[in-house]
Image 1 (cartoon, rainbow, N blue to C red):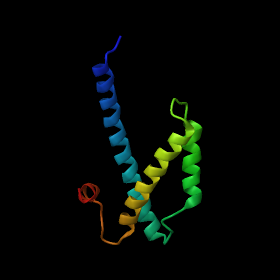
Image 2 (cartoon, helix red, strand yellow):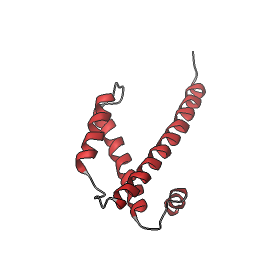
Image 3 (tube, rainbow, N blue to C red):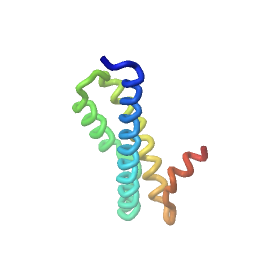
Length: 103
């Protein structure tokens, strides 16, 4: 039987993976921002965001309820939009997540 420290170590490992995946996702969002800028496309695309949210909920197998998945992904999409916004500004790049949002 695992003890609390074993479970906490496992959570730490998962958190590390989440951070890596979120940063990888943000790199994709940066590239999308560049493409949007070049194509003169709007930053906010509500139909695409609805699609992403619906897909996330569809993939949910619990134990988190769908409402929790929606809230988490809404926040992820907010941050992705911020990354895209910065990438769409000519001559700007996001360096170290804007110095960790100015700490």
